[in-house]
Amino acid sequence: MVKKGVIALSQEIESKKILELQDRIDANSKLLDDIVNRLVSEYCKPLDDYVTFIKSVLDDTNNPPTDLELDDFILNLPVLLYFTGEAQESLGIREDIAKAIRQELYNRAFDNATGTIADKTAEAELAVQNEQITQIAYQRAYRKVKLRMEAGYELLQSIKKVITRRGQEYEMSRIDPARIGGQ
Image (cartoon, rainbow, N blue to C red; front, side):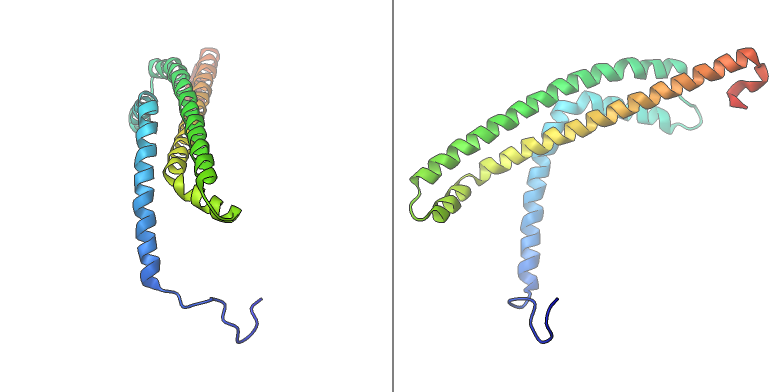
């Protein structure tokens, strides 16, 4: 709790500096986002395209997916997920290499720096900023690919449930034709 009459900030807020900092953050974030999205697109394009196709079939509410389309989905999704999983591991390898390169350069910069441990640490951290950003890009791309794969597996499970439900409805309609569509 701040005592009465005590100023909470050490100095006045300078909105111009804050806006400049936001612009710098936005520009750097856009660069990193572009790199990550390029990596993810490179590794996920077939899966992304197929999920987009599935979405277009589902969006056509006047024509629900046919059994043939559902069969197609259930056969193709695991294949695409298989190759995307392989790609995810490739990203993991690249992230590990980026981390090793960053650490090697950090150690070299630290050894060559002079001054106190804090001075050497600061100098080494500044020297490896680009390598750190590269490592972060691979790390984020790996996570995005992982999330897409998890969503793909969820989609696959949902399709399996629809097929099971349709099979149960079909069986019920054979036993009691008045129950077509679960009515």
